[in-house]
Image (cartoon, rainbow, N blue to C red; front, side, top):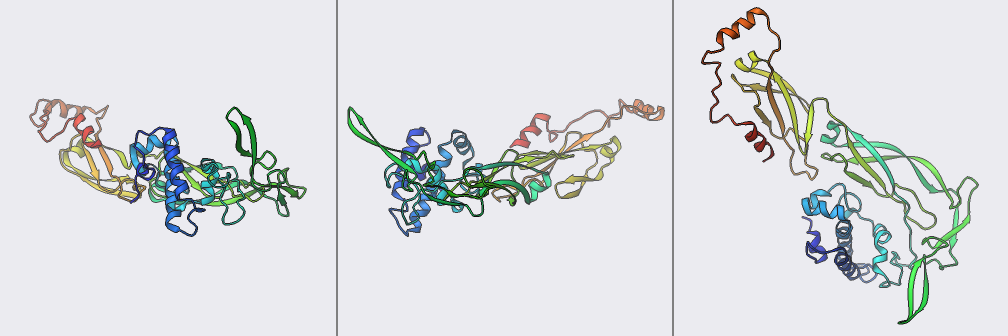
Length: 373
């Protein structure tokens, strides 16, 4: 079970942005790989702290987390869509390296054991994937074609002479408090530590070309409209010794012909005739994975809601599936022939036709309350 993000950073739920950043920096420095070489436990804690900061530092993500906890992001948030286990160390340093300040040589880049050279990250790509309700219920693997910027074959780079491959330049300024030193991104190489040396004729000024690539995206069951998934390293490349950006996949849910979704539950409107309501009947109804036969008892009332357990959408965390709620509607004919009309006229005051709800027959508001409880 994942630990609460506030506990991970050692802060309260009411902590402001500055307190969150300060707490993360403290944890990140404590468990930084350069301070704990070869320590897998420290690396894991470093990743968890980064994931906690990635969520809590974003006001929108923080609001979702405060409301739903880890369920708001399992499968869609954090670095890699599946929690800290899928995080890439380069992602962390690329996104949050500035937070470490001068604690590790002023760069914040992930040295990977040699030289301290900073690695830049390419830009992310964004696409939208449309899914049917059946695909959402069962999970699906989609293959999409994306246009990615990649380093051209034959391109080469050399160490930037401005920053000597560090990706940052140091500046010293005189102030009333004395000489102050600050670091900023190298203007020559934009932080990559490398500049173009040789490039093919078809490449752009940074040595990049655009290629079509077919990317396979595994979409888990239970995703919702508007959710974003991330496919690591399938965005654009960046020049030099860089890591690719990510492919951000936005989910769009297509409307179903018969079923309406509400969270993990599905709703189906079933219309039956007067004779069917009076005599009882068996009906085949649409469910997410084919038809389901249900039996309606004699004298069923319009507005009755039948709950089919587990016939809804699976929970994205794999806990359980929602239900299929069948709303029974007795259809009132608008036209009748003379004989049919005469029958009802003769029975309009018959005791069997006079409404006489039992205590077990719930009102509309009670049914709505039961539906959301």
